[in-house]
Image 1 (cartoon, helix red, strand yellow):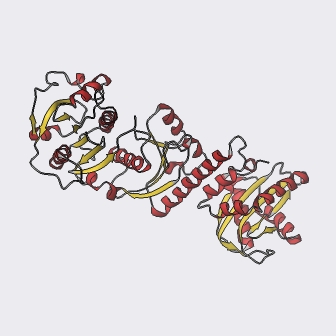
Image 2: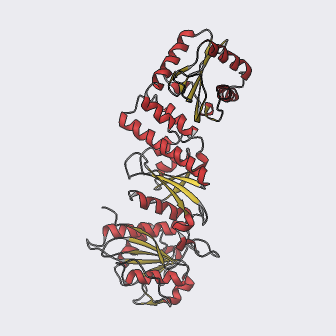
Image 3: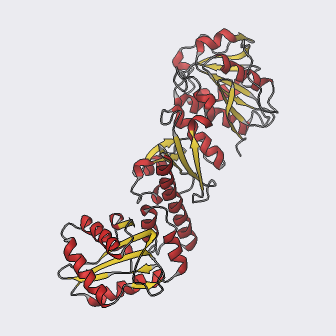
Length: 448
């Protein structure tokens, strides 16, 4: 028997009343708000008539009040959870924490008994009761009940789906508690958009996808979408990347709190929850209060530069590792700290012929990375020069151990301008992003 046929999210309630009368009234009101044809007074009268005959308590902490109504023509189920506990005429004198209300048709006593027996059987399972009692929100409670009848899924798939739903619902509860602006749900695991489609607070969710067309289409029906490229990063880098593109796209700003849920790439479920203070996490990125987060750099230009850098780190050139510096944005100031080391290979071409977004220019940008020096790119993506020696007038702050002259120069140019530098390490393949003289992101060499 599929309980989800008789239940709706609106009829799942976190109860506040401490007495049996108060709790039953809350449940009945939830039912009647969802079913306007029912009158609360008449429903309560039928329930109390049954309660006077015998208590609806069935097992420690659980009661199933029920009634049959004339002409109802269907079954209605409501569920309530009390954190504090309800004083109930229970068989073991303990408070009741789970309350299930069944309303059936007076002319269908057999089906009514079958539904009552099925719910009682489920609630007598200690493990199932424990899951219900640990639900952090009414949305999570509803998803646990809804997941009972999913016969097409294998047991491991059911467990993954339940875990994902529990994590997402718990994240929503945490977001409300800490007044977070949004909950980031990372979609590296297949089917996450499907998992969250039944959650009532989808307006709070931002689904992070790597930008594949199918993922975007699936996600748009479930939640807002943040495209953060490069799937397959470990979960920490997933979060950092999504924050980077969320901040650069104007979704988040200093002072915002974000709740992020993620999982191991390709695992098929989410298992990690983090609460993030955007200002603290990206203070170097946000320190300029008078300018846009990326200055004059368009977010898709940064995404494209990172994509080229990641490909270069993974592939190298002719089987050899290659280092590179790409300096993006604030060209008028950056050029004052540059010295051309070789004849500029981009000089003399029209702007539309040297855009970083042009796929035909990709191999050229990778090849010119083998030339000593930096590649300088305007904020709108036009490649201005290659083979550039960076000589900023101000040194960057002390960088993490292991970073050499290439990283020092890349960091320093961002300390004296509003530019962003993307650096590929020749020795390790790590791709670093610098802003305001500090490294704000470091991604390990991607696997081939």
